[in-house]
Length: 572
Ligand code: ZN
Image 1 (cartoon, protein in one colour):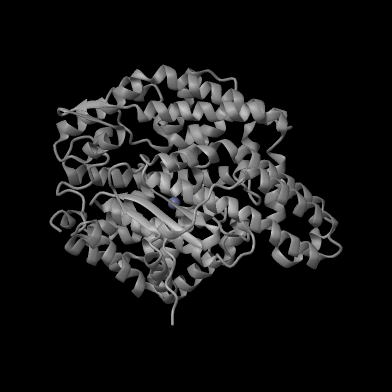
Image 2 (cartoon, helix red, strand yellow):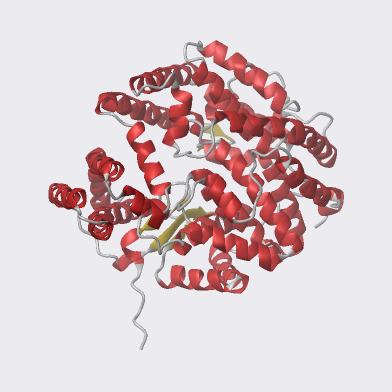
């Protein structure tokens, strides 16, 4: 007889006692330090990870339940507890990493589990010192202040108060005047807050530079890379990648924009026209969120045996909360609960094509962590973020053959839009990255000097931009809406690196779907056991940093796009 799968709502929760955990953790760590041989060292590590997993699993369960219903006072209090105690818990992990690096059995452990764990430990140690605690708190407060400004947006538009997210929907409106007015209202909100956002960013740059110098770096750039756990490439490689995008993608993007301008029938493509891709509107799914879920289940059952097992587990244990409802936090994410080997997908389905992106993108993340649940170390469950996005962005492409189910006759329109958007994102993504290099290499620059730098970067990477005289945007401050720049410096390039890798999986799947899928599953199984470039090589992809990779990935994409009669899609 089969035992029933435990469902997420039945996962037991109890607030962990951090005092008790600290004592147990430190005692086990002492045993690790004294371990007479590698086997013993490994066994004490297992015990150490059990203590750690208990804490982290409770933290994830509390956080998921809180975001599912932010009005629940119990989980709100629990979330507060973890927010307060997280630094203390991080201190324990730090102590463990120090012991690991100093262990006489380190080489033996590396021989058994690879060097990635030790490399990650080294970076965590390098980027922390008790001396920077007050600075870290200030950095946190500043990013929270930025988030608060954006969340405070309540813009009166067409008779209703709307937030920034809701305003974005009007940029796809068929009436050009509505698009223009919506864009004006959106950027007017940003203009009103420009002074405060300039100030917050200035303070952030200052405090990050201070953290960097206290830790012995010359500026924040390398610290930013280290914080992201990048162990096998640096700013030189990233600069080489940006150059490829500039040379290969920018001309193509300009041609695509020209085509869009003709398709939607405007004399010049203004900034408020860019989201409006088709006169006949964007493709929409044929059913409601429940129907999308049901079609999604069938899709993953058919895709490959591994995704079939995965989707059954996710559904049986109810590890997805997808439909928007009162009290739910906004946005979407995928996380992992160690003690149950359970991924969890959270989103706010709203009946648009975005739901299909969530269904494929977040499921790609969840599928990967499910495939790498066999690792004994949490550090290996997820890789670094640029590698994580390969799993999700590639899953968006592997599910292409099922798009007729979701969009009917508009499936080609959806696929065309998907590729266009992925490609057009690249110049913007690298512009954001280049800007941040300027910012942290010139930490003394004024707000206006930063704006001037953005403007010149934008002119090179996004030459088609037409701000139609909008003073705020013309002044070089469009970057202020990009939360990553405030919250996680140097993160943004990850999406572009992953996109080039996902394009390669797309092309491979066009040639030999089975082989491409096998490589993809292998990549997912490797989890975070290797650094980015090794994962790329391991799954048979070319490094995005290598000269020619961007050009060859793009060649296939532009050949596909050029065969599409975009005007015919207007009637699809
Ligand atoms: Zn993602």
